[in-house]
Length: 562
Image (cartoon, rainbow, N blue to C red):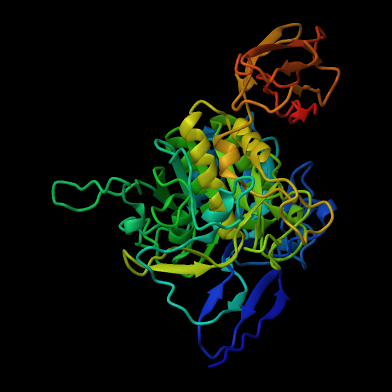
């Protein structure tokens, strides 16, 4: 039998639609949840598609191709969904005040709020006509920072044909696990997956289409049962932003698949970690910015630490989504992993991949080549297996499916982060991010575009680093202070090892001693102390709670003196 897949791209009002005509054998969808904004400019230097509202400094984002400012939008009599961001210094109670006024009869700006946000991002999702919004902004000009037209959220992707095979297995093989535990002097794929940590006690919040929590892949390694002899699940409570009656159940499959890669018994990286379904997409894979914002709000309020957010989704540059994720990471210290995107374009054009504090993931094949669909560019921080990945599926408690996409690469990294946090529970999000990057195999991926990383995820290096730094980060550091850390080797070197720390910004301070020398004799395992002496200059540390990382500050890898 043969199969033909015809993909037609048609851009209309900024939405991307995919039409497929096929004769079946097996179709493996390249999966990634993509948030497509209406009328968003794509040029990366533009950052966000903005147009002046004509009301002081308030700006309107994502206003569409045919509306250059709010005055034009007043001509549209149909109510539209807007994300209204209040200024950070505004009392969150102002959200209730504005919404109450909008919902009051005979108000100057009639409308209604479907969501209110009062934690990491202060504002609301309001359904209102353009002329009414104009009057709202006129009245609240001192309180509103910006307005963004809500974009469309959709599961989108390409399709790949493969030889027919049984993708439902009792013991499925995820080749990605085999690849990310590669050790030196071993085959790249040796049909083994070995790690020293299972991510026990770590909570992974999967923002997606929900999770089939009863799936066998989310049981415990020891097979524990409840009093009714039913397997106890590591899939815990979650949140439903869709509100269509399905709750956190997965009626699409994408979320279960991603959760399985992160923490599944058969297909997952961190086989002891907990997963939480945060359902932000419908059964058809559709939704809106407001659902993403509501999901992040719930995580902010309910997250159990240590925690990771796995987001196999993306949007063309959205200021609201970027702000919400950045604020959440800064206030809660939760590590966020995101899919890099499946458009074979610059990932810096998409949110939240463009957010520097997240870890945006590109996809690789089992031949160590960047996947043909994967986004690229400087915003891709790390690459992980993402093509033809087998994981849990939503159709039954024992079902599995094989998908491809940066959606599949993302939870590999989320699972690896859980392994790290399982051992270093106090690590902050920046610690985790840098530890993952330090542990990567360098120059491991070919076929990349210029300015794209070639670093491939590696969990063996992550769990067994060549050297250990404690503490890894300093908090509440002040100008003129001295911070000390101990450094030790994990394995006996074959010759003398010299570690040389360097500062990215030399004006911050200096190290004492300027380098550490570890012998290859019996004293190789003795820990040594290095001090970071911060210069005494007012305003040197711009952050109120400075984070200084030896890895960010660049302690170089071993230089072997042969």
